[in-house]
Image 1 (spheres, helix red, strand yellow):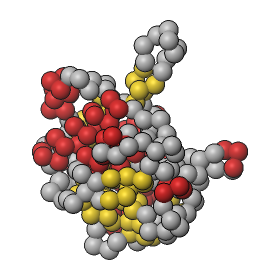
Image 2 (cartoon, rainbow, N blue to C red):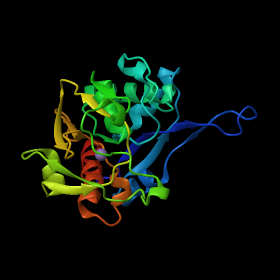
Image 3 (cartoon, rainbow, N blue to C red):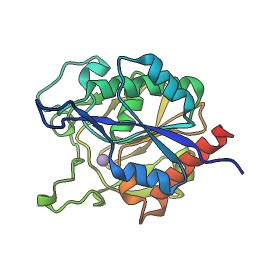
Image 4 (cartoon, rainbow, N blue to C red):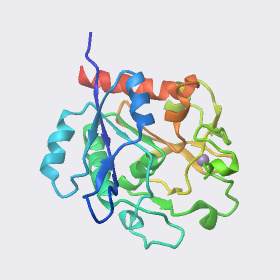
Length: 250
Ligand code: MN
């Protein structure tokens, strides 16, 4: 029996007591819980953006890489100037995640990006983002559905996605249409040449990207970690990723 795979999860910078104690690195609990439920062993990765040697040593241990949601990708990470509607970013996190993604692509190591994570996969391979969908994309439906005062929860199903046939995503979800949550105000604008868009929101926005060459290289714009406990298709995303990482380990 092959042993459980080790999956790296880069963290996010968060202020501790501003001005009094150094910043912290944190990770959202739901991502870790969904990964563990699917049989993966989580290894959270510190944002040692200036220490490539240490990052390489961590990376070498991993059977898979999981990039989670979080703050906005900094526009300088894809060669653009910041516009007013762009939110808080985390440059050390961008640097670490982009480096790890490029190494994982080169090594064909299974990689799973969620929300910001999907956007990072695109940026790491040369694509670009909308800094703010509502102000930059004509005809966009609402994708930032998270405010409790508006009646939203993180698992509120707010729009459908249409999945392209003959893709890894259709195989995993086993449906070609599914309702998802939507907790993002940025989005994929131009795709990296080595990626394929495999699911779309009703307004045409890319909601899933897949790469070739790796057993699992998938980025989803929604938050399956919030839906996995009750939604089998979303749970299967984590299971398929862990299965690919397990095969890689063996
Ligand atoms: Mn959406």
